[in-house]
Length: 161
Image 1 (cartoon, rainbow, N blue to C red):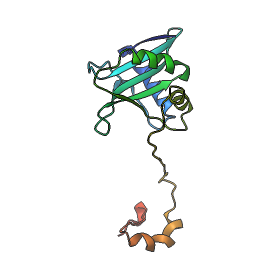
Image 2: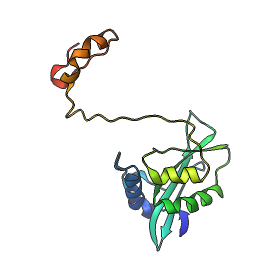
Image 3: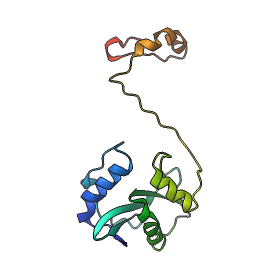
Image 4: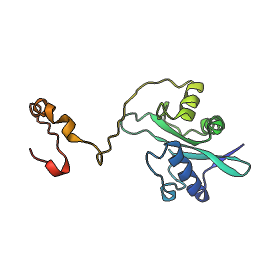
């Protein structure tokens, strides 16, 4: 396995790996992946047999944790440790924490973070509702409870307040 910096030519492969790693929850496009001159960002790829099989991106987490770098892994989990070690050898200065963001149903990231000693410091829950098939009528009998809180249940056809 060879770890190296991301190149523009890797963009389509990395986009495919990232889309796959999030189970198609969203689609990444090659134009989203560019070589960055930002000294606070790192993007590395792992090659196996000359083929890019995984990637890691480290970037400032943001205002909620200005001292932290966010780690995003994609691709084959077996490549995450070599990517992580290469990243640790070249961390940008000024950060005191690394934060990995994943979901518990993305096992390759969960296994890596657990093996690398990360702890679950914060958890949120996401939910998805297909509004094209949702039947608001099932909840019409409960509408009186929501009106007291200025919450209204409505479909596009019956949107009345």
